[in-house]
Length: 195
Image (cartoon, rainbow, N blue to C red; front, side, top):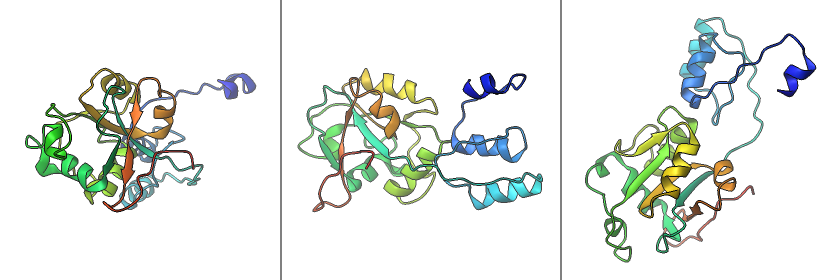
């Protein structure tokens, strides 16, 4: 909006897509700028080159992935990467469906999962960091590239667990509760933060 005010006659259209979907459009020459939550991949570089799309990659900032629960959840204050992997790995689909299956001390309640859409860089990073392989996760979760959908889902369900970028968590701390993550069982739990 500010750019258009300063540059009369120039129309800027902003579209919503995940990082992967955005790079597909960018490498086809359909968009001029692609805001991404991860670096461009080798395949995407090749696609851009094949379409004669030249670009400058400019890292601006790094996002922090946040794991969240409903504010009424009083049991999952911290979790380990191993527990998250147990929940999110492909073989968990249809099998890990209850909080008690994750940790014995968790209640016997259904586990409802929410996460960044499979076309997003956040999903790429989360699956690589937690499961150990990009695009490797269970498929039976509510996925969306629109983080507001995830905020509503997690904020409205005491049984929910989800992940997306830190910025949307910080804008919705009244509706969500962050979970501290332990890289290893004996490590210190880390809360998401700008630092």
